[in-house]
Length: 266
Image (cartoon, rainbow, N blue to C red; front, side, top):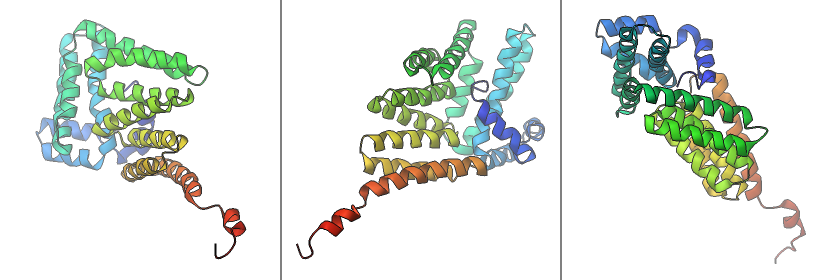
C-alpha cells in the first residue's frame, strides 16, 4: 500500500511530468477514454499500482477521519475503475482483485490492515540491529495482510523476511521468501522491487555455492531491470547484478597459479 512504499513515491515525484498525469487520466476516465488510460499505463508500468492505490488509501483515510461515507465510496470506485483498466493494459485480473478487496473490507479488516502496517514498520526499524525480532514482526504482518488480499503489503513483508533470514544465515528460508516476493512483485508490476528480490535470491544461492542457479536469477534480474524507466534506479540494480556475476565468474575460472604449477604434457 502507498504508505508502505515511500521510495516508490519518491521516484515518481522525481519523474514529475514524465510520469502518470493524474488530472489528465481522471478526465479520460470521465470521458470514458479507456484507450488513452491503457496506453498511459503501458508506458509507465511501475507507477500503475501506486497511482490507483492512492484512491484506495485516501478513501480509507477519509473514513477514519469521519468524513462522509460517500466520499470514501467515490474514491474507492475510482480506484477500482483504474485497477480494471490496469488489468486491461497488462492482462489478468490481479489489480482488480486487489482493489476490490481493499474497497470491500469490513471495519474489522480495515483495523487489521492498519495493524499490519504497524508490524511492518516495527520490523523494518528493528531489521539492522535485531533481525530475529524483525522477522517476528514481518511474520505477524503477513498473517494480517495476506488474508486481506493485500498483495503489495505481502510482497513487501516477504522481501524483508528474505533479508532477515539471510542475515541469520538461514539461506534456504531466505531463498524461499525472496522467490515468493519476486513472484508477487512481478505480478503487480513493481519492477524495482522484483529485481531486488531476484538479486537477493541470487546472493543467497551464491552463498551456498549454487552458482548455476545464481546466474539464472541474475539473468532474470537483469531482464527486469532493463524495463525500469528510472535510469538511476536501473543503473543501481544492474551494477549489483554485475558485481555478483563477477564474483561467480572468478569462482568458475581456473586458478592461474595451479595451471602454471602443473607440469607440461601431464
